[in-house]
Length: 270
Picture 1 (tube, helix red, strand yellow):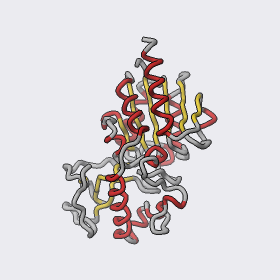
Picture 2 (tube, rainbow, N blue to C red):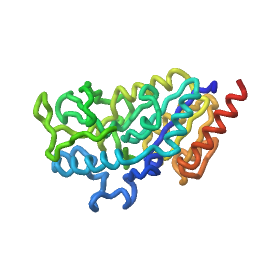
Picture 3 (cartoon, one colour):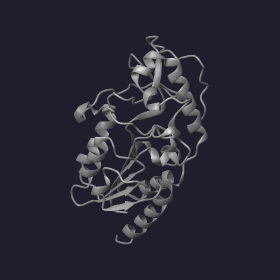
Picture 4 (tube, one colour):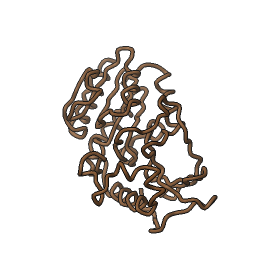
């Protein structure tokens, strides 16, 4: 399939695997608004409560399975000449469906990563080796989360107490981007590099309300030279007016069909 492809996904994709979004009462945890738990202020005030929530979220993700949308995206990546998946989801369902880490950017972080709240120490909940984080941003408006973000292995032996950094003894925290925090510089750079390398023939935006300015910006920049923009979302979003094709279905229902049609039609033109 001779095409340059960008796929942007949000919480609606993983919701169909049983992962709650932050939106609406279905996303609430013990009657608490997740948007008020996913903040540096909440962690400073009650780190135990925040960790309890994230441990439950981790376990829910471990128990979930990739759905047909995750699998369709992995299939598309295998057939595209150039491909990048940018997901707002912090879970590992795209990876478990077969999407390569080298062709995927988790712009809001990885829920299974555990990092120090003060220094540069990073570990993982799966027992992986530490690696240096990349805080900071290169995006306008400081690249900070200002809207209600979509959320997001083998089980790790997580303790019930709050983990502490082995380097500086500060509290460890989940490796996700909280509201008011900057997006990870290295991941932003990967997206920017892909966009700067040339226009895309196809952009698919699935399961996201596109309320973050950078999602809208990346999609429109990618199709600047007459690329096709396909939006897969049951509801209207700020991106809808720019889409060349609007599919008002769930991602799990629509993406397998869309990908199969793309692979067949574009391969036949070679």
